[in-house]
Amino acid sequence: MGVKSAERVLEIFELLKDYPEGLTSKEISVRLGYAGSSTFGLVKTLSEQGYLWEDEQKRYMLGARLIQLGAYASSFLDINKVAGQPLKKLMEKLQETVFMAVLSGEEIVYVAKVDNYRSISTNARLGGHKPIYCTGLGKTFLTFLPKEERDEIISRIKFAPITPNTITNREKLYEQLEIFEKQGYAIDNEEIEVGLWCASAPVFGSAGKMEAAVSVSGPTARMLGNKEEIVLELLKVTRELSKQLGYSGETK
Image (cartoon, rainbow, N blue to C red; front, side, top):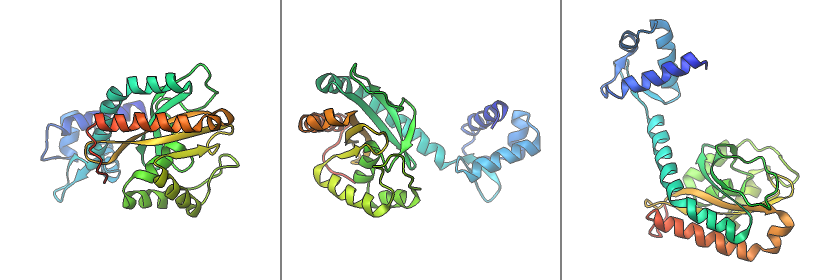
């Protein structure tokens, strides 16, 4: 999509927010001064992707996908506001790199990263996406999301080996998730990057649903040598964050 098309999409969103009853493609083109054919192509594509909703009278209004994205954005802001200082303290306590991520389809998105001077080189970056099935953060979501949602996500995963340790089939993934659920945290043992081990735990919101995952990552040997303290401090922080977000202990 070119810059001009992207600008037009945003202008369509801005226009439709003022018309909850919707507008036809022709009405949108007239109000924005666009050619009718190009407007129709844009709104049709946006409708097919769920960003707009088309009713029986061929009127378009803002769609459910935008509501979902807005909810994600709102939760990111709330979580980042609450999590900043605790994540920094976790890094200072353990002297390892700390990440926080949220879920986006079959991937996780990094929304916070607190580096340590001992950090090993990693290609994880703020705003970056990683597969859900081979990261500790992703597997935390798969462990603690509602079963129906988890199974639906796993059914869509296209497994691919990223390192020699990457799990590449659903059966082994489910076996791992069962263990993770019992112990209360997930791990990534060199599945996304060779030489990197991480532990990850869930953060729940007031509605009882998992909102984010927090991980501690570092060189495999060093992490395993300090595994008990790492897990203890990680769970302490994620439980405190969940409490600050209004979590009462009831999951959904």
